[in-house]
Picture 1 (spheres, one colour):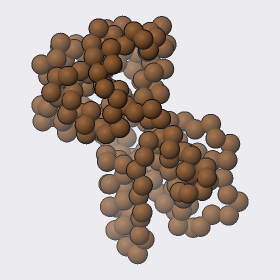
Picture 2 (cartoon, helix red, strand yellow; picture 1 turned 135 degrees about the vertical axis):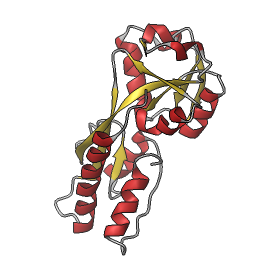
Picture 3 (cartoon, rainbow, N blue to C red; picture 1 turned 60 degrees about the horizontal axis):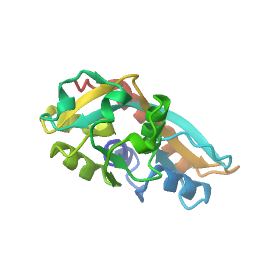
Amino acid sequence: AAYWLPDVLESFKRKYPRVLPRVVVGNSKLTEERVAARDLDIGLIEIVTEQHNIERRSAARDELMIICSPDHPLAKFKKLSAKDLIAHPFIDRDPGNGIRQIADEFFEAAGIAGSEITLCAELGSLAAIKQLAAAGLGFAIASERAIRRDVLEGRLAAIRLEPRIYTPLEVLLPRDKFRSRLITTFADYVCEEFARMAKDKGAVI
């Protein structure tokens, strides 16, 4: 909502100035449920849905990175495994967040139980997560595009995970037989723009 959608909305509005976008921000699980219930015309999430009454389109993907203060002990590494992280406080996402689920799977794949992780906080706001990480209170996991400016300006350090992991960018639509031309046009546009943005992104480190 904060790091991918604004550019897409700006260019779409320039192309179709009479369109009035109404954006509701929530985590992946909530967005998925609202699309399935037809409370939303379209959803953009960071997790692959298993809902049968939803049509999903894989638009792009973004690499997930460890973020921390440039003065944090982890900042000196070029890559970090799950076992490298368990001794340090972790700033996690709120339940239902797509990146939280991917992070959980990353630790589980390394044989690390949730009880072994030192939890610092659970936050629904990425801005708050970045602020705590920059202040040195712990590390977090965030998508590359969302932390690019903070890294370039020196507020955060970004370290690749080993193995590298990615968050999918999924476009969700209710599985309706009939759909307005506007919704179809916007879904197609989002997929094209997300793919272009992912391809054109610059390196973080």
